[in-house]
Each structure stands twice: as C-alpha cells, then as structure tokens.
Image 1 (cartoon, rainbow, N blue to C red):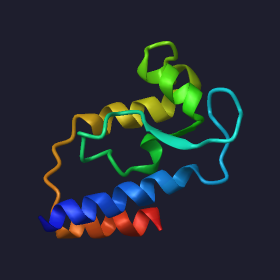
Image 2: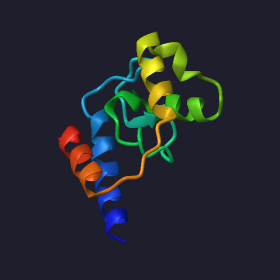
Image 3: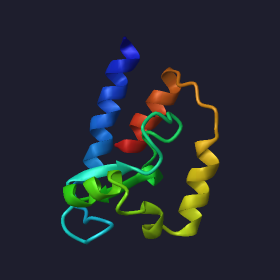
Image 4: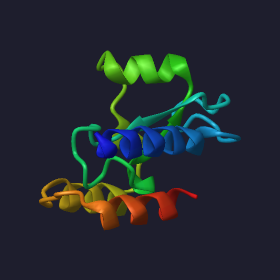
Length: 104
C-alpha cells in the first residue's frame, strides 16, 4: 500500500514537468506530460527523458494514433528510451527516493 502512495506522489510531480512549457508538437502552452514509453514501465515512468510536454489536443492526437511522438524527438533520446525500455526494474524504497530527488 505504501508504494501506491509514493507512486501517486511521483505521478503528480511528473505532471508538474509541463508547467511553463510549450507543447512539443504544436508550440501552444503545454497542459500535460505524455509518457513516451507507457506508464506501466517502472524504469521509465518517472524519467524526465520519457516526458513530452503537450497540449490536450495534441495529447489526444497522440493517443488516437494521429501523431507519432518519435517524429518530434532526437535520435539519441529514442535510443536511450529503447535501451531503458528493456531494463528489468523492481522498484524498492531507494528507487522511489531517487526518483523523487530527480523530479524535485
């Protein structure tokens, strides 16, 4: 149960990454953070590199398959995410503490 509390806290901190940012797709003010690699991947769920600031309209287009986020990212970033995507991650207290520190 404790992990759920920490994960919720980290999720809120992750969403704050959109504050004062512009949408990576259209340039309007960002209102959300899109997880490039889905939230179920714990190794990347709270990784800043996995965060793409987007407006709500573009976020909807991404999830509807109308926009490919990889068209808006440098190749190095895609390689990093693909490498981390396959990492085995079993979060423990230290992992959560490190992620909270990174998001502050």
